[in-house]
Image 1 (cartoon, one colour):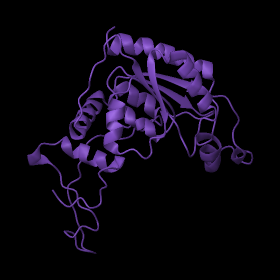
Image 2: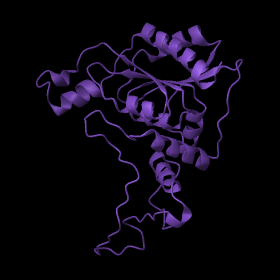
Image 3: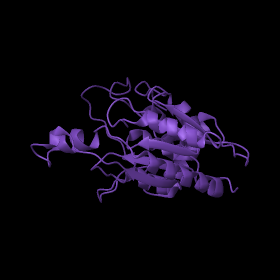
Image 4: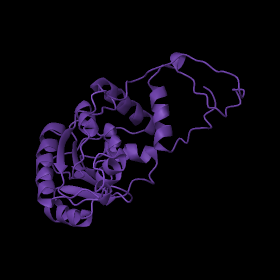
Length: 253
């Protein structure tokens, strides 16, 4: 295999490049060359065959990272193997595991601490709940975390791509900003065989939309990336449903 100097293995994207390569047998494993690779000469055309592993986006506007369950199963298995982990099933006396992702930049849940405290008070006997930022975790640590996870509560965003590492019949509760909707993580959840519920938030558009509601800056800064509050009783109800789903479908008890 060619030099991998352009890939940071601990970073998510670099790790995923290795995962895609792991899907091939050693005799058919593609090579990766980078522009600054010593094997390539500047200003000399370089051509190679084009390899499409998975079609990565639907054209219907809803979005779909991996459009078939087999693709999810293959990537999940390859990630577990490369991370050196194996799933462990729980017993009826074990607590379920839940992660509430904390965002620190855009699209923050403004009442997330109140939500966390409410979930702790309501479910601490049956669920071990974590509430944390994931940006600084290595890719391998994220694979391990999501493999062991039963329920994920998180705002719409790129971090939800990690649901591909959750075991089938785990559960995603996606918190959506007001006026925004993109179905990519719902569809990823379907192909990963996860339970899923969307909780829409109530609020106003940002001041970026005052002049031109159809502008790009309105759609992004004024709607998609706007901080918002969630309706906590709706999340509590969703968690109640997720517990029944996971216990019945994932663990069969």
